[in-house]
Image 1 (cartoon, rainbow, N blue to C red):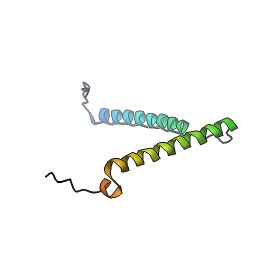
Image 2 (image 1 turned 90 degrees about the vertical axis):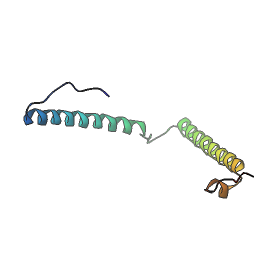
Image 3 (image 1 turned 180 degrees about the horizontal axis):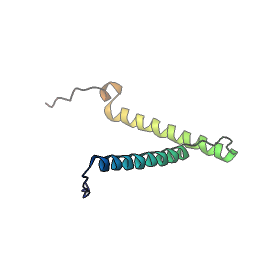
Image 4 (image 1 turned 180 degrees about the vertical axis):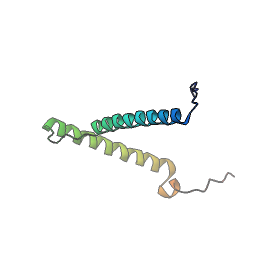
Length: 91
């Protein structure tokens, strides 16, 4: 963690620094909000290629989720054993 070498002697200096930090945080928050909106912006009128690519992507995600659940069920022997809190007893 970086050390702060600035020292503040008056209450006004502390208040000024607090306002500077508040403005910097607000500016960063606005930048993050803009980037977040850009990341999740949906295309209002997708082309046929984009539409097909979206369908393929969603299908691959669904198949991947199905295979993961199937693998977990086979590994643990069913849903009841996945959510069971009891441990196997060794003999």
